[in-house]
Length: 170
Image (cartoon, helix red, strand yellow):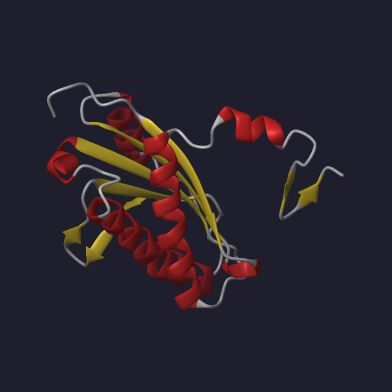
């Protein structure tokens, strides 16, 4: 890269119910603070939250190198399987799609690191929906990071309509 890469932070959401995917991404340059965070998270797992590198297939890490960090504590074998399987594969597909779409510069992938914080509902059971929703949410998060979305005017317009799947302000 010929100029300094500015860290990109994004949020993406897709799906409904227990198949919902909520992704937060932090994309940054090697040698910068994202690298420090990436390496620290990888080296300091905690019970139920074991960060790992995202792969396209066993032994083939995606690029940019991506660290999957679970936002939900993995407490059952089924939740672990869907998190490490379908959700991880969906993130892999989403990152690969983002590179193919030009949201991440293909010529820069070896100089970047990505952290993907991923929510997988502990009751999730539909692996195909988890895969699809995590792929979509990952692309959405990376697009938001690249284009600094949402615009502040869009955020301000929602001032009286704050809600999420667990709470509605009015």
